[in-house]
Image (cartoon, helix red, strand yellow):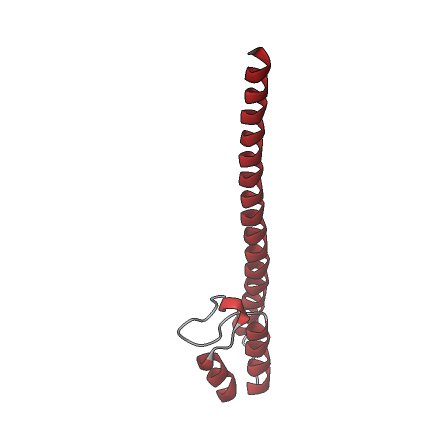
Length: 105
């Protein structure tokens, strides 16, 4: 009976370890997603700071510079349309409003 109890304890311990490992893997995926989002937001923040510094200095931009800036933001996976500006595009999919905005610029 002692051996059975010992093996049952090992089985319970093994199952707990498997559950813990699954939890750790889930947390690892969440942290990875947060790190990726943080990197994207830092990039966007840097670009926006550069843009605002240029605006504060009174530097006027040509329409080509404006279009290139918007295109760069769009290619980095963010919306440039007025309704969703700065939000991450789902799966970097195309946005008809952004495309129209880029055509106008």
